[in-house]
Image (cartoon, rainbow, N blue to C red):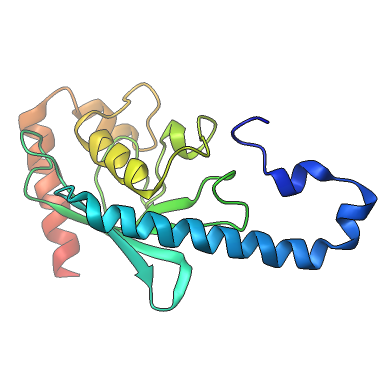
Amino acid sequence: MAQNVDPTAAAGSGAARKGSESSASIARGSVSKRLQQELMTLMMSGHKGISAFPESDNLFRWIGTIDGAAGTVYEGLRYKLSLEFPSGYPYNPPTVKFLTSCYHPNVDGEGNICLDILKDKWSALYDVRTILLSIQSLLGEPNVQSPLNVAAAQLWSNQQEYKLRLREAYARQLKS
């Protein structure tokens, strides 16, 4: 079976539809189990600069943090993100958005992120750690050919000017 095909959805027979309520709760339980496992893996991984935890008691809504990687214009900056996991996770990607305003070529004013692994290149093999590390990497290595923020993409080639604009935007959001 393909890695992005939910085995409960693949059945699709009349018998499978009869038990759709129970299969939905089973699926939700397996997603919860997967998310608990990912939380433990993330906590034990010891990766510096990334973290994520469920928001209150809701295992399907997490708050993550990413520190800008050393040697990039984002070094020393910390960003907060929201991660919302669908009932079809891990066969469907979570919705990930920046909560901290982020001046970046692949992030729009609403915090939406243009990153292929969160869209058409998603794989059920990815986990929260992979997502956070990918976004952290994206900060220092944007895809300026596919920008959500055209002004940031155009400024990217001038790193000194970009860093100045980035720091101004970051300081502004800290004050608000």
